[in-house]
Image: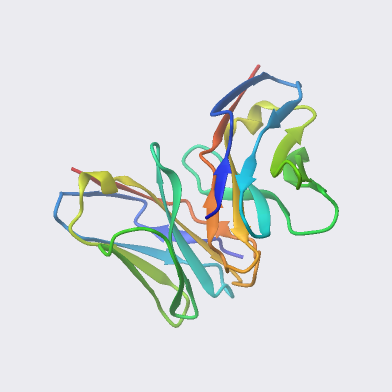
Length: 113
Length: 114
């Protein structure tokens, strides 16, 4: 069974631009969660989608948004990039039930200059 | 609100020695508890989880953890570490009523010294 894939793996953007990251979950998984990982803040929950609906949301500004398609693939968008958005963005998929094991992708390393 | 504390940011240990990585959590409601491992340039992998029942949980790669409700702790242990255990370890919690919202601790960097 293929694992969680994230594209692109690396990305360099300029301040003020916007970016879209993609996550393809494990086949059969209906939940996709997104996390931001930085040296200073650690792993922070962004949001979670289940069956195309946002089910949970972390404490991030509205510049961070996401969506999920009918095939469970998910995209995350960050608009008006700031230097502080430089981070490793991880997505995780699961079956979506309580305490379901989350399977993480390798992440997208975003650098904002 | 829930929070997770990992008291040691870095833990160096000699190969074949035992190790304990400490985790304490704070929550006003019942939670599930997890330990994840992250190898360099990779995503996270679940080591073990506590949902209910026996407080001693065994995971992959010879790791185990013990849930202590009175001390709100979930320490991770391994009796004999290998070089390949060098990685970042994250303790995490999720509410029993909240689907997939996982709160992670700051992580502990385990360095195994040959």
